[in-house]
Length: 342
Image (cartoon, rainbow, N blue to C red):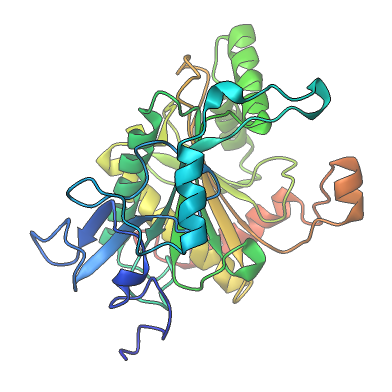
């Protein structure tokens, strides 16, 4: 077995038959995109164990349109087909005290490299740029579906961050409902814009650039900073200096700079906290939030340094033992020691 693979890992090259058929394949071989054979660089597959019920028409089918059954255990296949056939008109008939609604959508996995031991901090820059472009494409695909209200794009790296497999991967979950926390953020942004005529994130950026206390890195297009009073230690936010409501709309220069900053920022965490688990996520304007002037996209990265315990659960209040000013100082010191063009 090649040194870059791990026996039994379904995401490793050579084990493609263990996963659902891909919806996107980016090849390392010129002219071979769309092929899932040897030489692939990035694969996007439906999650074999999705967190949401599949939209009708989103279950994996072969070229003839027949449902592919080999990749699913018999019981799970029965559950998937049954859910897809449910009559949604029966929802909401329970007691008002016990109301429920089925969440439908899609759940995809981005296999970022055939190398089982790769870190995004070590991937070739062009590979990371390609990954960001694939992210954009899948966000656009799901956001265009009429029933989808929100698309969550995130990465869990390490068991403490929620990853069940070591192989480098990230995920997308498309939802038919807008999560309450996202709705609250959207309402706050709309209210600020209605009151001031300015985007809240743009105003925050201007204040952060003026203060400089929480700034970590600045490029021609982007700003990386540790947000004021962040609820998690060492949380880093990256966004565009120009107002942009959707990550999907970043241009080539911005994607190039973002790919560099993501690689660098994961490297900063690894320097400060070797082998640390971390998450990253993209905040982009939900499809049904109609005002593009109020929402500003962002990327957030945070190591898993603390645990949610009794106080946090009982009060819905997070304890952050590291001031963002201290976090920014530590990250900035490492950033200044390295080549910013990496």
